[in-house]
Each structure stands twice: as C-alpha cells, then as structure tokens.
Length: 177
Image 1: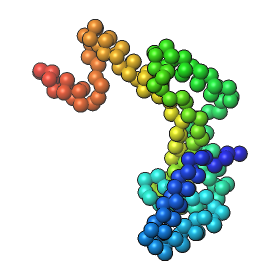
Image 2: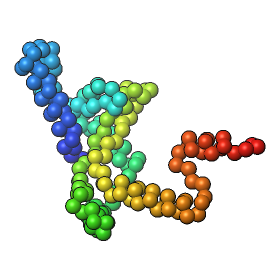
Image 3: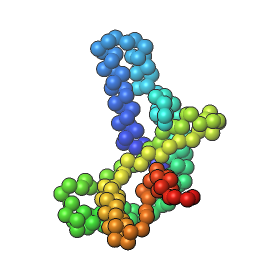
Image 4: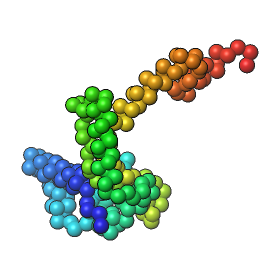
C-alpha cells in the first residue's frame, strides 16, 4: 500500500503553518476556523492542478488515483533497478568529471494534483502525477547531444532545424517555390 508522500505532507503542513501565522499576526477568524478544521479532519487535502483549490478526499480515493496515474505512465521494476540506475549515473558523472557538481539521485515518492478544470471532474476525477525524483544526468546528456549534433551538421553541411521557426525561415528563403 502506498504511503502518503512526504511532499504532500510538507505542502499541507506549510499551508497550515501559513494559515496559523496569518491567524496570529492579523487575527483572521475565518482562516483560524479553517485551520482548525484542517487539523481535525481525517480526510486528506489534495491540491488542485491549475487553481489554488484544495479538495478533501478519502485515503482510498487518493491511493486509487496515485495507482492509476503511476501504472498509466510507468512499469513496475525490481528494487535493485533503482540502485543500478544510481550507480550508472555516478559512473557517468565521474567519467565527465562532474561528480563534485551533480547532486545525487533523489529517492522521493510521487504525488498527485487533481485536475479540477477537466469536464466531468465530479464524477470522474483525474489527476496529474508529480514525480519529484529527477536526475541531472538528462540535462548533461542533452548538452552532449547538442554539441555532437552541431559538429555533425557543420561537418556534413546538411540542414537540421531545431524549431518550427527555423524551418519556416528556410522555406521562405527558397526561390521559385
């Protein structure tokens, strides 16, 4: 069974802390009552995707939404796969002499935001999966590929466009279309 993510707890805790802080400094009675309600509530509070709303959901629904989102995007792998990926990232960073500047791979659990702007949200809630575990090796490999790509293009003299605008400019420069 999934354990609630640390980030979700942290997000809710920061939200509650800010409400309490406002309550103490500015005496906002309405916000104080909301804070007390949130603290006493047994249901979970999940943030909305593109709005500032929060929604109360049962733990079963939250588990179902996370499970559905994860299985839609990812496949299950053995636990040692993560350790293999981390060791491979270390090797890549060391081979490029970047091991002192690259952060370690964060092992953090994912969480969801509810898509409350979607049609039929009340009957069929959908959510966005947020995966905070991102590696910096992808950025490094992207820069290496860009450098190699530019060398190949300059050596061969072939056209290779990086965006739509450059294609349109090239096409407009062609005489007698």
